[in-house]
Length: 304
Length: 304
Image (cartoon, rainbow over all chains, first blue to last red):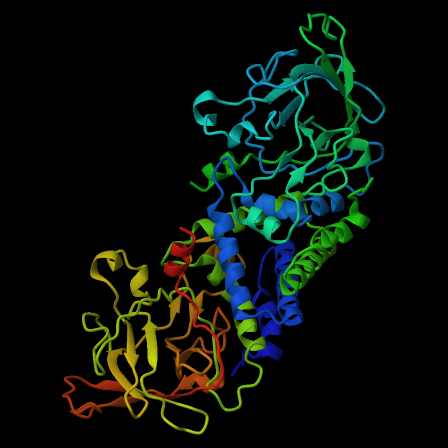
């Protein structure tokens, strides 16, 4: 009889996946078994630790909602998201660097006209963002949808606010590039902010004495047909957390100098009422395929 | 500036846990980072696979309730639960072998008098279970609470039935050993049964062409003060799934020959109305400490 003792167990579990029809799934699962078993053996994991892990993972799943993804947050703070990003973008060939999607992409961004103030009702220093999407040779790409989202002046995303359900999105929009590959919009200067610490991931960050801060940034998701979807941030130069981002998302090339301006007119010729900031950043797209990430709400519906 | 690229990322994430006050937690987290990163690098995990994993883990958490623990089930079918059991029970010194707790321990078992028919209302072949709890020298241990639970004639635990909330437990009880270390009860012969396949874990089992069956068994949790809590099953000899238990829980020593009997009286002197089965099994306890596992409902309350 098969004895599932310590010496034979791992081999038996690996064998149990031998008939998996999809060879990639079989490989991933058998490697997963090896990794998990190696971890348990190497650490001599106790029952109490195993129970803690089961409970932690359960609570992480139960903290997720259509607008909050605690497992992505866990993947982020363990550097797994950035590593997945890295192994899938080894050759950039001059294309803009990528970074994590983060847990606050809720999808369904509404298309807005260029120049829109996406944070019209929010307090904060005003910022004008001008950008262009090109291929690797600098040829402008027209009609490309670009989703943007960022935190407010207090470090919260719209979806974290109790008012989200009634008031709808804020600091979150889609723009479509013009014939010259350009798009531009108004918003506020985003702030560095803590990831949510009211869930299991926050518990871990606090208990391990890490700080929970992300340096200020704007998220961009550029999805041009015939090009790899570009998921990235643009960071504000000078932020004190650039070197210790809690989700390890910073790359030098993604840090933009934000100019302080006092010009009476913004770049689109409309009046500026107060001193403002100018962010200028171009995105260079790499030819290829790939689906843009689905927002969590869409996933929730798939399984509903 | 710190560049969180592929070569520096893992080291940066490991460093981020350097200030963890608890040295064991620090070790477990830093080893976890190494294992996870090694897995992602080795497999070249794609975004789609990462997204699948995030979604799978989320749904696994969300399938959990106070009476269903899908993450324990996941740990079970990946052989992780049995390995944790093995690394924590390397030296048995004659003590009864251990196996997985399983996801159906809901705790709060009600103490019943010896001889009780714990499956009184259920169809199935009748079985009399007689048992004794001793130390490693065979000295009987008195006043020891023993939780027992098993599946019914159709392979379901009481907690899986919609009637559980109104009708309460069935085939689930606590007995307390007498001065001679003995306890006994009536029940039905349990059946081999599939683990629940209506959740993410079942999906994985089906998609990988594994079978979902567990060989027939009765769960025992023996919790004597001054001894290691004993979490085990007793399996029915002859079951066709003994060699391929979906959760890898079988050990030779835990397989009991179940005698078919036609005696008119059962071992406690009371009449048997139909042919019956006799299970005889003794539990030998190892001196030591350790807390019995908390039922999931109690855990849910801790975090409420």
